[in-house]
Length: 91
Image (cartoon, rainbow, N blue to C red):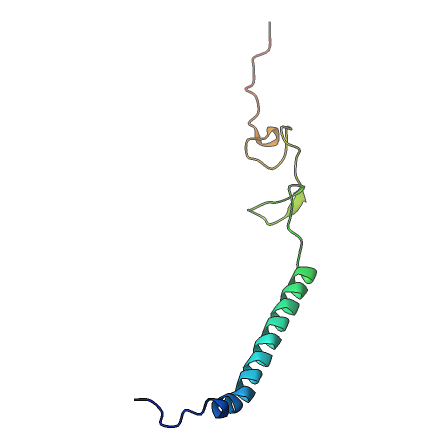
C-alpha cells in the first residue's frame, strides 16, 4: 500500500524544518562533546611515570630506586634482607 498523494515538493517543504532542527542538535552535541573532551584533557591529572612509585600496601608515594640499585621498595632489596648468620668468635 502506498500513499495516494505523492507530491514530492510538498513533502520536501514539510520536512525541511525538522531536518534542519535535527542537524542543529547533532552539531550542538558534537561541539559539546569536543569541548568536554578538551576540558577533561586540560584539567586531568598527568600519569605517574617511573619516577614516582606507590606502595600498594600503604598508598604512600615516593621516588623510585634507580634500576639495578640496592634498596627500593621491592621485598628482595637489601633493606629487607635477613641478617647474616652469627659466627662464633675465632680462638
